[in-house]
Image (cartoon, rainbow, N blue to C red):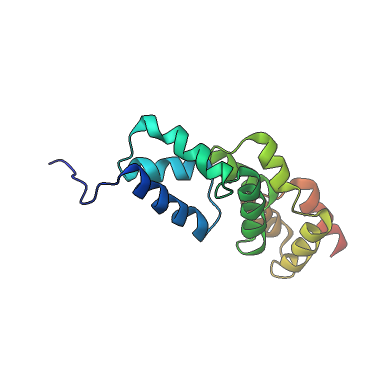
Length: 147
């Protein structure tokens, strides 16, 4: 049984649809390319569409990395290591990953760890939680010592 698309896109219609997709929230290049493939856009047209999105400001890897890092830290409580792994999984360049991680201040991370420390009375339990969340050992141990 083969999958058939219910809708086909012309190049102009695909451009409008992908611009709307990128305008909704920050996207990385791999997400956009995957979306275009799922829309049935010819592989030869992908680089042209992606370049056009970048030129018009709809797609920006640096902006995506910064928004991803802020969101995952503040909303989901991810640590720097887990954020970096998430960005790598989305095939973001290492330079953009570093820029994204620069959004997290050491002070903000430390304050978050101190707040979380109160929830875990056992030291080993807290350290295990911190490692699972992607925080490095030195930050977690410092939070342990200060609490």
